[in-house]
Image (cartoon, protein in one colour):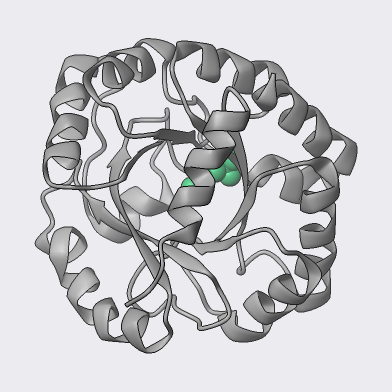
Length: 248
Ligand code: 1GP
């Protein structure tokens, strides 16, 4: 039996701050030493946890996760593109079902393949309803999963998806515009979804400024994820600005 300390920690973050800040490290975009440096900076900046993963992976995940674990006591939470993206050197995994899509492989297939490995690696699975929202251009998740995102002007479709996730027992909902999205998840969609659920709401994809992060929180996001912008800019001062804007 695995503990659920990471999920409890997420709730403690929300008790302490108005919202939480998660930094996504894409193992495809960084070598071990660079990832380790990033992990140190994430802690110094005041972010709350590290998400590790992406849609497509050719790098060896184990040494990267191991290096992150050595550099920070922040939770390392896997954010996998499929059932191959697993390592024992993380603490937890967003055990996601792509509920905005109708591809059975990403609704339950990959989850079945991953389950024995999650048990073997003693990772904490955090059941998460993952919803792809149209972000202005085709994204890697859309292509890799062969699913269509929910149209960005249809919050009335997004709301019942999130509510269904909660009714199925999921512990988090993640609204995803896609990494590097031209347009982040719209505020109206965030507020509509938030009004229908009581589990924490994660929002990510295309959030490029601390002001945008604050806007998404004001709309109802509980956790903000950024990836691309820090990978590209390498601007660690910006990471602190994000953390401050999110924590309020
Ligand atoms: C992607 O939501 C995350 O899965 C983060 O997106 O890289 O655009 O910040 P960005």
